[in-house]
Length: 173
Image (cartoon, rainbow, N blue to C red; front, side, top):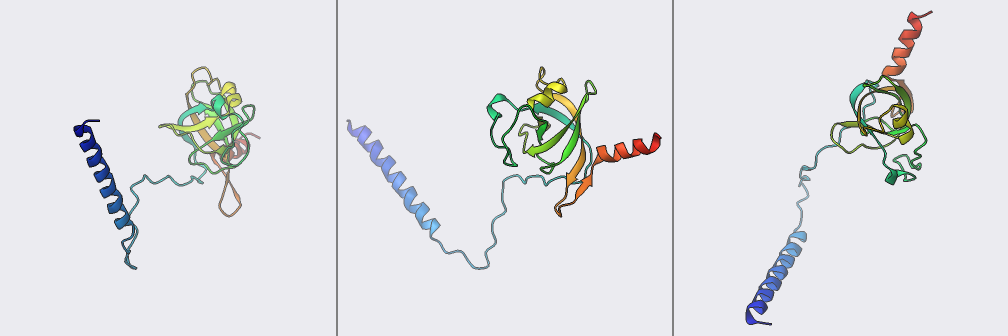
């Protein structure tokens, strides 16, 4: 080992040790009793949308790697069920998802969180994606109209699809 390499190692160890001592000193500094926590720089998560309003965006579907894995509600993901994931709709929401390219619709239950891809509003089970003719493309424009939206107090609010059905029923004797 040459002197030059030994010197570099010594300097690197010195810098590492200095950083460790400095970090330990900062960790032990007392915090004033009236100090307020620093504002988080992480982006705020959007709150749950319990309004029942319809939304348009893109839908995708669960890949094979998610089959059988636990969803946010604790149940395993069943690719042959009508389940879906939403970032904003409360778990337990029932919603009508319509493929805007062909008009096909299916009712799903929100049991998971996601999708975590920009501009996507819902992830569908493979069976539902197949019924809506989304599987071949992988992504399609959809409208998600809630039917039943669970509220924090345990009640269920009718969503846009339920209100629309009630209106239609009233207009057609």
